[in-house]
Amino acid sequence: QVPLVESGGGLVQAGGSLRLSCAVSGRAFNYMAWFRQAPGKEREFVAWVVRSGANTYYLDSVKGRFTISSDNAKKTVTLQMNSLKPEDTAVYYCAAGPIGSSTWRAYNFWGQGTQVTVSS
Picture (tube, rainbow, N blue to C red):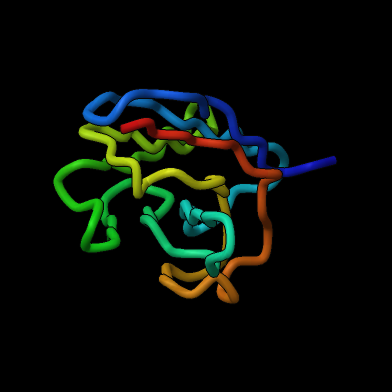
């Protein structure tokens, strides 16, 4: 059973919005995060949230545009992306692990990824 399943990616024009969701099955995780990977580039941290939703942390370039949130009742983690830019184009991955970190190695479980494409 895959513990993390992303949804909500797609094609949007610059300045538009998308909402990504990550459905968590089975056990609960202390920290959830979103990473992204553009073609030819390394996987990049975007944001993390603690399970309670009380604490979050963002990549500088997405601060004020993206919001990560956790809904324990629904067992989902959401990434609301506003004012999207072409440089946000990437495959976005949901991740789960025991600590909040901007390093992908800190996360034990990963979703399959969802494509986000922002046209100029």
